Image (cartoon, rainbow, N blue to C red; front, side):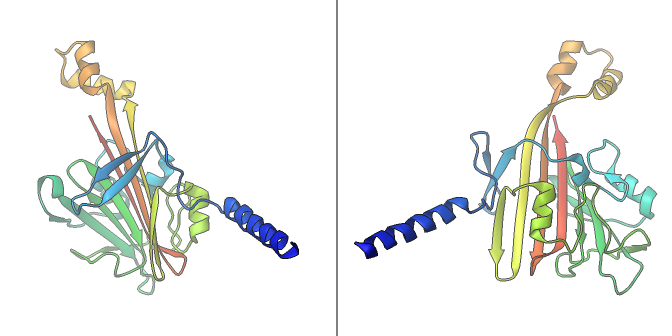
Length: 240
């Protein structure tokens, strides 16, 4: 009887501890959607948006209508870009790196057919150069996005800033966490004003039907090696 009682106590204790285990990804929601990637993998997408600071770095803002490359040129200097693919696969990049040769930090800006992104990395194998990177005194290991994500942080530190990830993957000492969000947003009055200037013959109804709302997609992908952040990519797109 004593052994049976002891076993019950142990089982209850284990169940209690398991119940207290913190979730490793954001809990599923009815508003979640699934997208199928070109490689056949299914991608979970959450409804909502992330703090805008995660799409701003070193004076460049992915969410602005102003071209990302033009913003980067004004901040770091003009450099030749490298492009690959076409149509939906089109990808163009420019790269900047630290002046300090011992500092492997690189900041890459990219744009596709409808999206723009940046990658901050200190791991040479993360980004295989398509062209030379322009050295800049503004690039260093201490660089962080406007919301505080910085290379070298632990997973716990990143999650404290971003919340629980949408999904994750692990292989040996390499860990990846992903944040994928989408939502429909109403156009700002300033945006509708630009549409009116572009199409002066359109009625208010036509303007709202065509440009009143847009689909906003956000993605942040982070890689850790031995629980140290070595790469972060922030991707943003807004389409009618």
